Structures are given as structure tokens and as C-alpha cells.
Length: 261
Image (cartoon, rainbow, N blue to C red; front, side, top):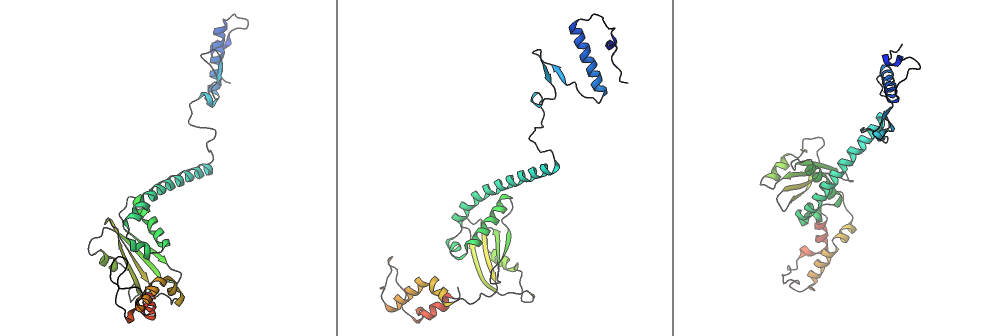
């Protein structure tokens, strides 16, 4: 049995004012719902005299909304998406700052000698370092299709002795089973002295076809040929003297030299 307030047992037929009766009914309903689990009365009297549903979300200032995810998997997916979006936006802003700086501070030989795919890797690595507020200190390893390995060392500053310290950190030695000969070293420094970027290539490069050098060094071969024939004069367009003709500029010697580049 659910106990009811004493005023609910008013004799039938007893006269009661409407306002008092209404208050008694509401009080009885409140006692009944509270005893059934602490539920609130479904209706309350508004200031305009009408009744309003207390459980209508439009009438409550609740943090929950009907479009919110309620299942655990849905909440995890929404959280993951939000984190991915935030990190993507941060990385995009970092790259937008790094790319102009990188293009303006790296020396011209870097863009002529380093392939574009490597340059993109360098930009992404530097952007990640700057975005994490870390020191400009990172090693990158890349494998070329012909089996060679390329190690890129990025260090802060351009102080003397930095290249020597990088060489001491190189992983391969002649006593190692995985030994590969160091075939090329490319040394670059940012023009603002903020970092050094050096590239170490391990492994012997495969023989290239003659036609490759003929194509990439065509303008050099043409210049050497004109120089030997004496058809270009003694000075260039800026007034600088041309070198004297010699066997060094013969086609076979030029090609042999270009194949080592």
C-alpha cells in the first residue's frame, strides 16, 4: 500500500474551494509519484495559467540533445573523427608556415640535386618537428628502387664540426654484415643558419645507359663541342672568358665524368 496524505481522505460531498482542491490533487499526485521511484510530476502550472510538460526537452536546459550519439561505438567513432580533424587542421597550418620558409631558406643546389620526392619527405618531417615544438633533430631513412639506402640527417644550426658529428653517427661499418659503401654525400645548410640537412647515399649505383647522359647533359656536351671547334669566341655574354680547348672537353671524357655525377 502507498500511503496518501491525510487531506486526501476528505469525506465525499464535502465542499471545498476549487483552488484548494486543485492543490490537494497536485500534492497527492506528487506523493504518489515520489513513492513510486522519485519521479517528478509530469505537469506543472505555468505563469500564464497553462500547464507544461516538465519532460519536454524544449522546456528544460539539459546538456543532452536528441541528435547526440548514445551508443558506445557511436561515441568512439565521433571522438576519433574529432581528434583526426583537429590534428589535420594543426598539421595543415604548420605546413602552410613551413613551406614558404623552406623554399626561401634552402640553397639553390638543394633543389637541383635532391629529387622532389625526397624534398617532400623533408618538408613533412620538418613540419612535424616544428608542430610538436621539438628541436630540429631527426634522421630519415629511404630505400631507392635499385637497393641503395639514403640517410638524411637534420640538425639545428650550422656550427663547425656538425658534419663530422653526423659522420660519426652513420650506422654502417666495414665490419658489419650489412655493410654498404658510402657512395655520395650531399651537404646543405639553411641560409638563415637555422638547420643543416645532409644526405648520405649508401650502395653502388647501377650502370646507366649512354643515352641517359646524352639527354641530361646535352647542353654541356654541346658547349664542349663548340669550345673545341672554336665557334663560341673567347668570352661569354657577360664578358667572362671561356676555358682553353683541351682533351678534357672531348665527348668521351665529358660523358665519363657525367656518369659519375
